Length: 142
Image (tube, rainbow, N blue to C red; front, side, top):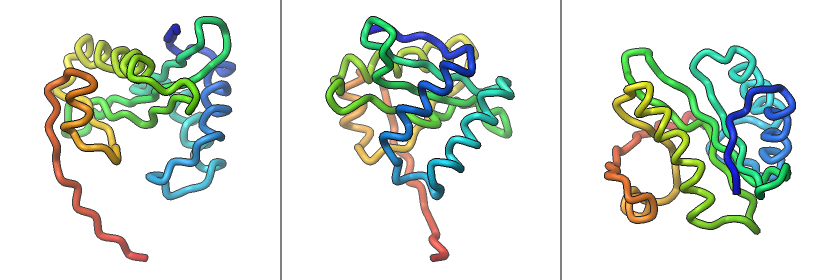
């Protein structure tokens, strides 16, 4: 397995091919809107970074994308994290989380956040990171 930071549009397109395989329930949009938002962030470069996980060759099997939120907060938010089902293992997920963790340390961000359907306890045991949970209150209008 190898993780490398996406630098080129061809790298971003590999992520989009993987993203097409897994519609995320947390997004309130279809793939076309996801693609447009992703590419806008990727092309602006500013506070957005993404990494591809490969099978050791050039075949992508996963990715992580994150952005630096500096508006009233000093944190990095994971935009999306995905590993193909037949490659899912703790090592693959940890390899992807590690690059964001290192970015957070280098950038002196106070925290890294992501949305997940699993508890902080499970993630903490798997990642060996001191995680905390915050409740997100949601008001749905529809």
